[in-house]
Length: 542
Image 1 (cartoon, rainbow, N blue to C red):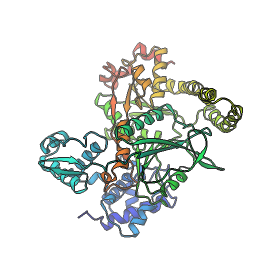
Image 2: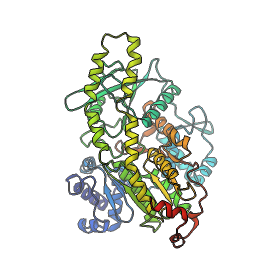
Image 3: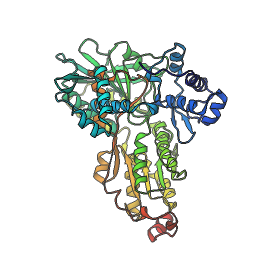
Image 4: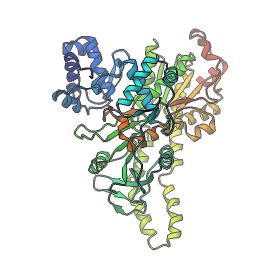
């Protein structure tokens, strides 16, 4: 029988939800301290901590170092609805207070979802699983029994096997929905293109066909577009297994797309690359699952722990994207780890929210895109199809000009790099993504800063460019996330018991390359660093 939420915890949770949903603490604001909230609500400090942990579990707040919590979403009315209806479930329990067997169950289930275990082979023995997950035999056994009860595993003889998904019908397909331009071409950045390629590969491995449909969204029009630029309806029928959707920073009318997809009553797996997106409270759709590579700060925490273990006691977080929620969440994850290590000043934010000229010129460029594409469409009307097929990609690649984007970004990053180098105690730069890390690496080399002897550089995304330059980067485990998303569509029961509003994050890993290595400075005490080396003198003057 599931544990019931105690009345005091329900009281504290109701108080927090009302405070956030009614606008007293809007998204982006910081909650009062837990002690203050506990006094206001007339509950104990421990009770208020449990209530805040529930909000963290559902992606409503983040942070939590000491008593500091930041509101990242005001869409929490669904929690009040559940409280008003008297609903008690394990989905309202903070993950921080789960039992060891429950944590082991979650880890095994994630490994199943990301393809670590094959449907065609038996799982390792209980003894092997207990050793792998660092638990007792009894704990591993209880976790496996719970997965069997959830219908994820089944016993075959003396071993455990994953319950296989239903055999696919001939011509069964999974449909990816993404924003497109007026020609039907999907608007994907270089990072998103990597996700796109993995989706194709995993679908092929799963023996499911893969189809893409674009959508045009704006204030005046909304339409689904085929790859030839013509308007179309969403495909329906038994052969549609489900839908995938990728959310980045700029898509308009995301909720309208999801509303239309909900009419088809098919599983929907949403990949949130922007961070902070949540299903609006008015939408009740249990068949949706949100997967995240950015909304939770665990990746940043992993990087922070990695640096702390190697005695980097003062680091810089460099981001020109601090207007975006994911950048704030990433910084908070790093700060949390350093504060817990009694280094409250160990992280130096070096950021800006809106560089002069960069966003303005990009916005102006986007404002004219529709007119430019309409001109191109009219200009090529009547041309032979073979000629137009060659000309279209050339024209589209010119707008917007990625080279202009990179050049302008690097220009504004120089001021951030100068500021970070001026602090002689900083021994590592944590860059918001690989693009910033590459610019940082080039800047340091051009100004005689030895990498990694003087400074370490780490990025996020593990892009091909980072591999080429030898830059250490955090790999978000693209294949694991996509495998989990498609696995949900093919076999929804593997997600039994998970709340449909709570983002699912798959663990990634740090890929070490030559921008992190044996550093002489990182083993020195803080006091010994006050005598700068010749390299430090030169770099601090830049």
